Length: 287
Image (cartoon, rainbow, N blue to C red; front, side, top):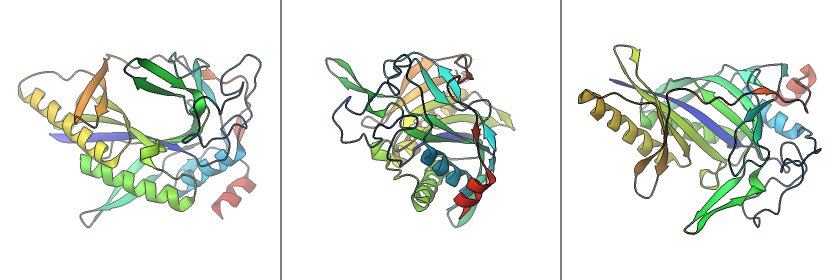
């Protein structure tokens, strides 16, 4: 059986301010809930204004990956409820992302491997939950921090390939100057989808959320692949599910089982006009 892996990578862009407001984006060492405003907290009447530097940085990544930039893309609302999402929705790009296609090549055991890019889009980050024995605390400083999400095709064939792909991507991001890409700070994190394929027939995938270290990516994917292989060898059936990864215990933690995709009720963001990329801006970014 072949291992099939695809990644959804979230990259925090190294802008001075957030994606749609003027709050400082460097939240890592700040006191909780001190870098917020009516816009990133979703207060009634507060309107978003796009950060043009974030768009420029996202374009740098798209061009470096050989992606096709959409000269006119759109922002959408992704609707869901969670304690760290004060607006009740996340501004992202769903229907028409910033860029599609492209690839990233990397070296493994002296051979060149390539992974195709499905799409690249801009979105805002959510807040952060801090779990304590007494309960969960919410820090909204991260709300609205600019992200670029890179979605790959399922071209990776081993946990080790996934690790080396991410290492190469981090090097590229730092070379472009668009992100520090420190995984320990959450500036580069990914969700991984894994399934086993037999005779070119894809199996049921499982998702592993919020992997934030190269070692964690490799170990979590290896654990998931082993669990699926053992289950199938016993005649069992893999259920579509979402897992977290407990790095300290080296275990997958079941978060939810699901039979179908979430219904996020995406619709166009009414407070933002379409994002139009001029030929002049593209030429400037290419330089």
